[in-house]
Image (tube, rainbow, N blue to C red):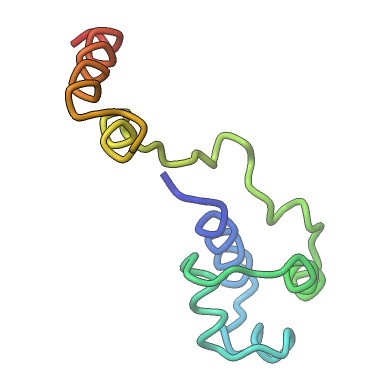
Length: 108
């Protein structure tokens, strides 16, 4: 599932393309490089709240339109067994037992 910056980037790209603006046009308006806009649209670079506000102004839309709905975001979850393996509080035999319990709780 996409993270916050991937969703924001996609919404920025959609808003930009629907207005037939180039990445260079947006970069100039925000005083950023075109490669920064590319990275923002691909979710590879974080965008500040101020720049997000400037994007909304440049596109003449409400800032809210660029924000993701709650259902669009999910945090990737580390599998329980990976968490158990990385926890140094338990011995290897205790980790093995914990994994059995987790598997049973998950219906395995």
